[in-house]
Image (cartoon, rainbow, N blue to C red; front, side, top):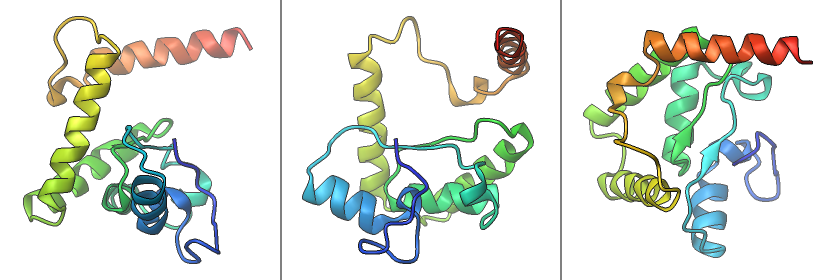
Length: 144
């Protein structure tokens, strides 16, 4: 999981989670990391104060992230997905990199022995999942 820290000697303009120099250059090429890269919550202040959810999601995926997360701001999820979808449909992501990312995610799911059939993308974030997530948040708050 990447952090939203600025590493000025590597990339003076972008935090690590949005930096192609860091993710593709250092992590993938120099260190030969072949696993799934997750971006920490793009709704965190270090990112959200500077970028909208859609722009942040697109930037982190272009940088080399495989999974972009928005964890605490449900209204930000739809615009992020819409932006990524729009950019993907317009051919703004490298097709080979996109396929390699999907392969890494599939390989990780297979290694983790993901139980049962994998959910289709349209089921993620459905009403049932939102209710489940809210129930978990309530229980966590009660136990703190």
